Length: 380
Image (tube, one colour):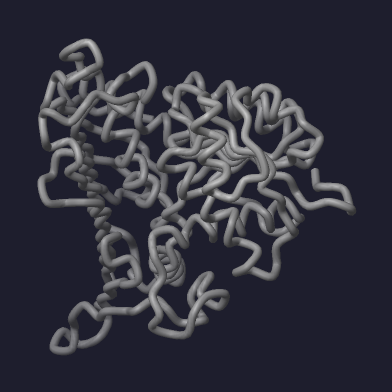
């Protein structure tokens, strides 16, 4: 599905908080940066509070504001529905939008549980036969340094993958007086650190290595059991931190850690990949750098080499600044919008899609099951 020849693709963004603002930035910049995308219109921003969403639409550059997503997704001037809501709303909005003939971009994790994700995949498969795109927003796949890491692994520079370490650490919940929010309730968030940031770590393990998870062992912890709510202390019903061991195709092992209680760690997604012929290391807090070890040179010459991923030959960089002029966290959202628009226009398929999201949701749910069984191995 594409817009008619006399108008651009209309985008409706549902949600305007943290992720909505990041996505707004992407839709605002994508045409200015990339010359291989069709024209778009930032048609409508959707939120529950009319006064607040109207103010946000004006600030973020949307043509209008609305409060009823059901009315918006059937509009003729809307071609793409971008979902940046809490997880419990993903399934209903995405399925309805796909059934209305729209392309959909849904923020991760895809759903709050496997059953919801399966419904979304069924809708996406039906929509694909009509030419629609159902895209999942695991934005770190669009970080240029991680694209370069994947390329090196695909070229065989690391040899056979033996081990992966991935941790995503934040500290915004260390203060026990930090207030209750939707992210701390199972009914709205599905899970805590596991689904929120642990999903990124697990996705990167599979994205970088090309290997699927075959079995998991996991533990979860709620380190602050209650938080200040509107009517007094409220029970936290999700995890603050999560740990898992993943068995991968071919015998490789990955260790995963996710925490929103790691004092001093602001947004540290750190990934290390070890193979028979080399190794890689990446830290999101230095997102333009990749560290590479070539294990095939003489041991007297071995050592991790810092690669500054800002050359025009690196993914996406030809559209931005001269060499050495670094990109930021928000640029990966622009790359995501570009890849979605190219896919809609008949270019390479967008990944990850909803089926990838379902596969990841099964891993997340298996970790939860493992924790409930005192860390027993759960096979996928």
